[in-house]
Length: 500
Image (tube, rainbow, N blue to C red):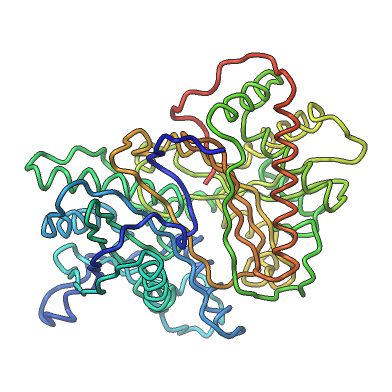
């Protein structure tokens, strides 16, 4: 049951975005050489991060093996009060590109001169000089119906955003009669979910400062591409007997793979791709979320462990697995220069929750919390080191085709993200996936409560399972909250651990 208060920050499928009908203008990032051939365009060339290289090749491989291009993009929106200053908004977009160099990059494969037939190290990232960037403006049209507007934007973005050929970023604004909404859409190659909140918040701040003539007050940030270089350096220092590698090695021995299959049969073949569906349900309202937090706190656990326990119980009831194994993406933003940077600052940790013979929530919670705390010991392990020491056979470009729908568990507290307290800006993160071979679940918390976000293959069997899955999670939570938990102060929306 949702609160009546407006939540300033939330996550939705793009098709559910709250957009006003109206006129749409978009800007595409282009190197100025397309318009002024004599201008210097490149600032420098860098190596992409390991995650970017991996993802680039995964999408390229998928496009070669399966019909239909895979589009995975994430949009961030923000409310614009009053009449839109188009020049001010355009300048705000440009300032964001200058501030975060990953947003003004182009990717290209170098020739394999030594005929290694390898993939890593050949992808290059050209960073465009800020003065060498042109925002190519286009009038999309005027839409009197919100449904038609959403459909037109989805079709346009699907055809425009391209992981392997570019562009990887698109910006625009919807001029409404009563309100307007600015948006920035990025391929997953250059952003994670946390970064979407950063982009929306900073665009709103920069725009407001620009139109009022005030100075832009934002913290200094580092470059994601520098983070990627640092990650490669750290990878070289990881030894085979590193405790983080040993943790993963044990998990892989028991699981059979780095990645995990969804624990309920979805009647698909290994490596089979399908159209994707995205669904979000509200599990708890704000007061119920606080009550659930107190319940977890009274048992020396936190909300993320509580949701892992609830998730495990629900899947166990449907699928009957004795142990629930999954991987969890975790944010890599501990250093000050990365906290407000845009990029893909994510690593993975393994989670295992034994279920056989356990019939009390307190026991499942204790097990889930212990698994979560143990997994955090490997949270700062560079992804490249994981595959270097465990074997390249587990790389997604190989391993995904050896698995049925891959699953993961994730949690993020949106109350802790930039701009989450500013109701007038009303920021939204929206995900769009066209095709997938996954069955992924995110839990997220906002000022309105706790939500469950599912990105699954879109088949009759998968849709049936998602309905049962969501209903089971809701039922477990309802039964838990019908008890009288001990009182414990809820977490303040401060800078604490989050996943992404």
